[in-house]
Length: 320
Image (cartoon, rainbow, N blue to C red; front, side):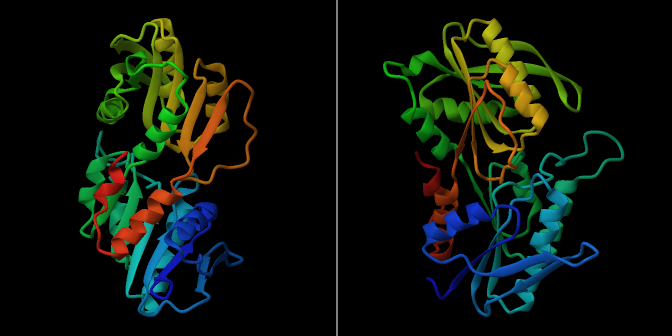
């Protein structure tokens, strides 16, 4: 496998790429991804990729324009260096929230990004917890859509308080769009299910207006695919507490946390926020009052690469 697979990383999340390479059992290959004095991206592969299966690990969040362009240039360079196939491992798919025209004269940027990836020479995309699953249909190449749920559910079961029963836990969808995801978690945990309704008052402000489901005396687990300013999570957490919830934790696949989001979390009833290392988080100071737990998806993505290379089923990775 070492002589046929090459795993490279851009600048978006090199620590995760190293974990993936360790899981696959190959060294992380050497690529120089820098900048010219005027800011243009410079890419040079420091070892041959001719006839190899190339996997480029590059989430496109936090600095989406920079990291997306890095990925496109790296893919083009690999293709022109005669790589057999070029696979993009995108743990977090940027621009996924722009997946439809919700008002006049706006773009469908997720489709534009899909077109750019294909045009750059990428022949397969491996991603995780897309904000909108229908984005898979924007691609005319194979796309493997993975889920962080097995990793998160394992952690939740490992850290459950002694004596806590399944009936004591309720999974809460913080908005109607997350109900299907919350239902999946509830089924895996054997927990109850509740739904919070919200009204967005501005791009960064959310008002929770109603909660459907019984949370009184229960340990609530808020489930969402991503959070940035944490307005949705904190609004739902406050509403759950008002309805008598005993405790509130939150789990998200992608933590795009801003400083404002961290401060909100510290002031909210949320006792712990669990997220994955799909994104490389900046070195910001975590305020007192919030516990952040980061779970690695390196093994999950590494196993996916091994199965894809070996033409094996990827769906087994969805099992707990």
